Structure formats: C-alpha cells, structure tokens
Length: 535
Image (cartoon, rainbow, N blue to C red; front, side):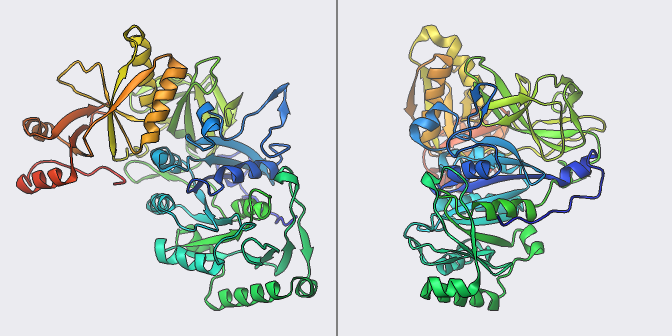
C-alpha cells in the first residue's frame, strides 16, 4: 500500500482549527459515464466504509445505501441528485460530495461546489474533455477550487495520455502535473510509475473490482525486463514531463492553476488508493470563509454554516425533509440554538444527523468542513446562513439561467392539495425553478429548467412521492432575463414576452427567441434586462 504519514495541525484536536486540519471536504465532477459514481464507491471501499463495492457494510441489521439512493437514479443508472458521504481514512474525516454528471442537473452541482474545498475531476481516457466537463471546470475556476484529475478507464482502449495532458492545457487552461504515469497504452495497461518515488506499481485486476486490489511494487530493473517497450516508452515520457517542468507544485495547485494527475481504472480499483491518498495529502483543509461583505470568519469563532442543499423524502417511510449544512466555523453541538439569518429567528438543532447516502445517524457535534443534516427543517432554504455568536451572512447561491419552460397541471383536480404541496417542496429543493404570474391566480405554474430531464424528475417525484400525477406542456419561450418593476410593466405590453415572478422575488422576463430579445435590447437600451448566471 502506498500511503504517507500526515502530520496533524499542532492545535488542540478539540479546537475548531485543529479539527478542521483533519477534515477534507471535496466533490467529484465529471461528464456522464466517465466513472464518477464508480470512483465514489471505490473510495468507500478503500476507506473501509463498505466491505464490497456496490454493496454496503451491514449495521444493526440493515444495509446502508451509497451514492445513487433515489429510485429514479437506480432505474436510469445515472446520478441525478448530489449525495453526501462521510467516512474516515488515515485519521482524517473525509466529506465526499458525489454530484450529478448529467448537464440537466448542473445547477445542483453548482450548489455542491459552493460547499467544498477541492474537486476531483474524472476524465474518460477515451473521450477527454467534454462539454459538461468544461462547464463544470469554469464553475470550479470561478470559485478558485483546487482540482485533482483522474484519467479513468485506462484498462480500455483510449487516447494517448500525453495528448490528454495537452488538451487540458489547451481547452481549459489547466496545466496537468502527473503524479502517476501509465506503463502501456490504453487497453494494454501494465501499471503506473509513481513519479514521486519512481516505483513501478503493477496493474492487477480483482474479481469484478469488488474488493481492494493488491498493489505489487516492482523495481525498475525487473520492470524493464518484464514490460519491455512499454516500460521504455513510459520512462521516456516521464523524462519529457520532467523537462517541461510538469512536477507537482502545491502553490499553483491550491491557486487552481495546475492539477496533479493520476491514471487508473476505478472499475478494477487500480489507482484509486493513489488518488484517495492525494485527497488527504494535497487537498486543502477547511479555511476561514468570506461572508457576503468579503470579511473572513475565523475557524475558531462561534458556529456558523450555510445550507447548500435541501432534500425531501430520503426516507419515504417518514416523508422527511433534510437541510444539508456546511459547517464553516466553530463547534456545532446538537441541541444548540442558533440564529436563522434570513429571518433573525432562533432555530433549534435537536434533530441533527451525519449523512451517508440516504442513511443517517444522530450526531452530537461537528466541526468546520463537516456536512450535517438538519431533519424536518421546514424554514431553511438553499443559501440560508445559520450562526451563533456574532452575526454573519454568507454569500447567496445564484440560480442558473433556465433554458426550457413548461406549464405544469395536475391530472386529477381532486389531488390539487397534494399538487401544491409537492410543487412547493420540489421548488425549495431546487429541482426546478417555479414561476408564477403575480397578476393572475395561476393554478398552473410554469416550470423553468436547464434541461428536459429536470422536468422528468419533477414529474416522477410529484407522482410517486406526493401522489399527484401531472401533465407538462412545453412552451415556446427560449430565454430569460432578470428585470425590474418598471421595465416589467413595459414588457407586459410587448408581444412575444411574458413576465413572471420567481419565489425568491426575482422578476423574470421570458422571450420566445434570442433574436427577439436582441431586438428589444437594441430598441430599448434603458430597459433592465440582466443576464442570469451560467448562460
């Protein structure tokens, strides 16, 4: 096993700064089918959080679900909601946030990225940089998140790794600094050279990748004799990488300018331990966070945190609602009363849990970097700040620019109450944006989303979790702009435009085509028509 020892922060382990030094909170991002969820499962396997990949360790007579816990995820075979998984590894507490890979759920991913300190970017060695990868990377760059890169599926045919290194720099301006380098071409994988120790780690398969694979260390002389041309080529490539200064530089990595790169196969477990060790060794621990005014709140100050996700019905038997809170400072203790910043009201934290996929356990305390679940916290919304001691408000989490718009109607009018309750809940979760006409009763709200699959998830959950089947009718609107009251009145008298109110109070003007929007902007440059984020 290739593990390094880590020196913990000299601060007291029961002080927030000391506990924070032992935390690593990161997300995994990728294009769909790059192997993100498989890698998540293998991290849990190597950390001992599960006994067998794809299964879970029995606990008190029940089985723990892992990352894809939602019924629709299991039916589709894709991740459609973010998941929090906390486990221990090498005396550290790791908070892993698995994110949806599909672009239709990029807004959920964006919210998760607001709550982490680093990112693992998974690339399929056969495909390299794809459109969704590029979009997610831009979000990481905007948040100045350090990125570790994993070239996955090297046991299958794919592209030359040097070509992929160049592509990273050319397409997303991220310079890869390899930590492990492959011996053999994609599909004929022999193992990796660890550029830190110059050790050759031979690739071995495990039965269905279900258990942690052995890592066989081979000296250079033996590797040269046994691997032949594949070894010689890998050594030449490593020398080339050294010549161009592709060594790991911690300062540029933390600044988001370079990315330590690892090679392996998550499905067969190879390279997973190297990457998990790097999360502990290289990814930064939680640091003081800036509030909405740019002032940093120290780790040792009183408790504070913000809600980055709300999820209902994780436990269908209880129809609960969980608000996920990233702890930013101080010591959280279950039962403490904190302040809900948006309302200024006290909030009791009696029902606080740790999170592992869909399963939860009551917790008594948490520290900076941890993610806690507050159960049945009906008053908490995405982006809300909670604090004790001196007041603080963390920056809000922006909404994405919707690209599709559809009208939702209940199929059965007798289920109107369930329809309204379900729409309100799923809107609070951010599954879709819900727009209403403030000048009309509007029993059929308009849904706004990034992609069609958001609507499918919305309809599925409304029917199966709330008992309200719906009909969705796509509209002709194509683009939205934020506007103000004065401009809204003028737009309402303009053809091809509709003005609706979002729950957060934003007025959105919907246009039937980008060309019509451009015409109105040209004719009325003084009207307020602001772009939304991530267009």
